[in-house]
Length: 116
Image 1 (spheres, rainbow, N blue to C red):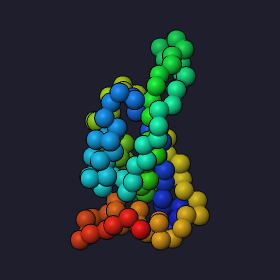
Image 2: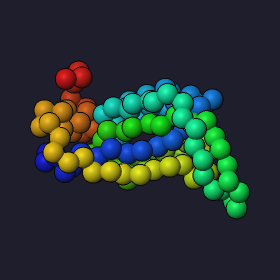
Image 3: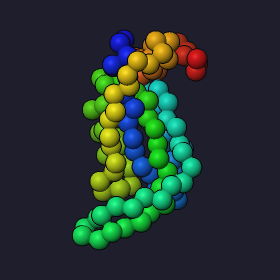
Image 4: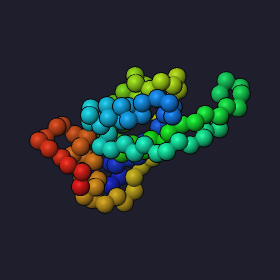
C-alpha cells in the first residue's frame, strides 16, 4: 500500500453522544484502523439560515481510500446528525509500517493485528 492510499477522515460528533461506541463500531467493522476522539471543542457554523454553536468532539478516523465509501455509508447509518461532517484528507508520506498497519486493520480479518 502506498502512502497515498491512507486517508484521515474528519467527523464531528455531539459531545453528549456515545463517541466511543461509534468509534468502536467503525473499528470493529474494519471501516477504520483507528479513531482518535479529541476533547470537546466548540463549533460555530451556519445551519438553516442561523449561526449556531455546539459542543462537539472531533474524531480523526484513520483508514484507506478503498474503505471510504463503506465508512461513509456506516457514518450515515449510525451518526445522529442529519448531515454529519465527513471530510477525507489524503495522508502524504506516512511511515510505511503505520500505513501497512492501516491496510491490515481495514482489510479482510486475518488472525490478530495489534497496534504497532
